[in-house]
Image 1 (cartoon, rainbow, N blue to C red):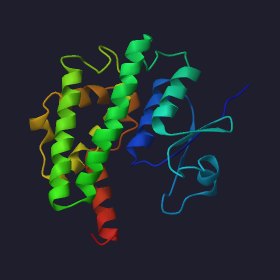
Image 2 (image 1 turned 90 degrees about the vertical axis):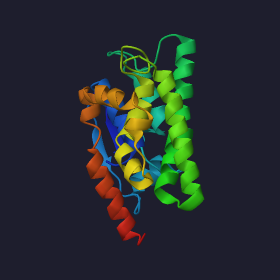
Image 3 (image 1 turned 60 degrees about the vertical axis):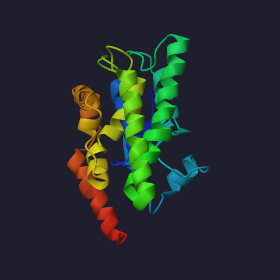
Image 4 (image 1 turned 135 degrees about the vertical axis):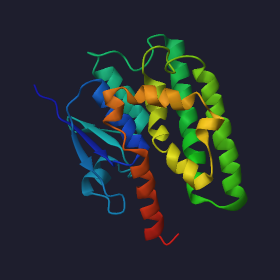
Length: 218
């Protein structure tokens, strides 16, 4: 029996990138349906009526919203390739902790760098770098966050690596100087086809962001 896998996503969304990477890691064929978030489709509203946001993974007609939940679902359902999460329950709990840390600290402060001004922006920059340094400490001298193999925490963070250039330009930051281990880590991640084929170029994202600012008159 064939399987129908659809992803409601947006090319620039770091959360959509996570799900695309996980599907690629598992070599799952799927149909991508790009969403216009300013004019949400009836399918998106039907599949995610609570938050009305992307990404939404639809597997045989059943919707799975939220990126981290979708990545975990993909890992549990398609077990023919290497697991994205550690097999040890404690290590798996730690991976989930760091993924939520990324959402709560990296995403939130990164967003504030892009949309705020003055003292609020300066505080967001400070907290953003502090959070990256914490992650850098967790990475240590390992190739990837899980050790030698690319996995769940890498998938959670690497889409924001694609946005680093935009954060740097808008926040007058130099992430490579502040967190020198994260750039080599990002380059190692990009050696995986699942990542390089799922992440847009950093300059393309920055141009996209500038176009949004211009359209909003900012």
